[in-house]
Image 1 (cartoon, one colour):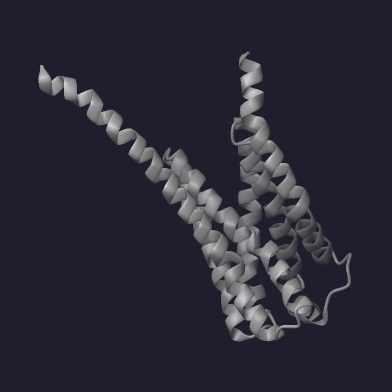
Image 2 (image 1 turned 135 degrees about the vertical axis):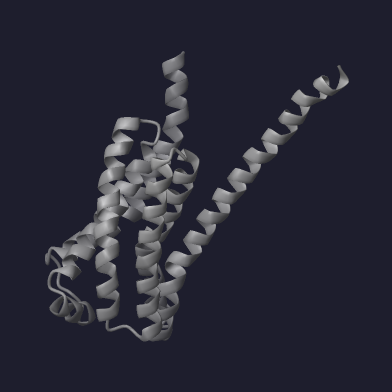
Length: 224
């Protein structure tokens, strides 16, 4: 009975994670790694960036692509401590490399200043959330660590939503430069805002559940 209940608890999250990986994460990761490994022809804009940064650009693409995969694996295996730790450490290393190389790549980008700033700030926020999450788990704040990792994953998902936004801009024949500049910020700010909102509401719900219970335990003591 215990094994069956464990399967029932873990299975829905694993199914959702698998669907997200299959539909969104895997294609984006494959595309990023293929570009970073020079297995796909680069658009002229990215080709210029690679020529400027022959080492940082492929490192950024490959590490950021792998980060998406291992963040998803770490999230899906959060109840399996050994696997979660291993996947989390690999994800942290990939985020560190991907975030650090994102900064020079953003500055070398042929996009406008607004888009460059969006990519640069995304890299800073990504690295800051990683450091905060590592500090939280080091001092034993597991719930804070989980919320920060969720926020970090939201920032990482910007790579997915950026491509979706660009596809829609091209399909709808919108002004590309303006659309790309908006997408460079919205692709990671909107998921980050949603992740912070969900994390805060979850913490608030736990606090609300805890307070009445605390009062009930105190009332009999006041009457005696």
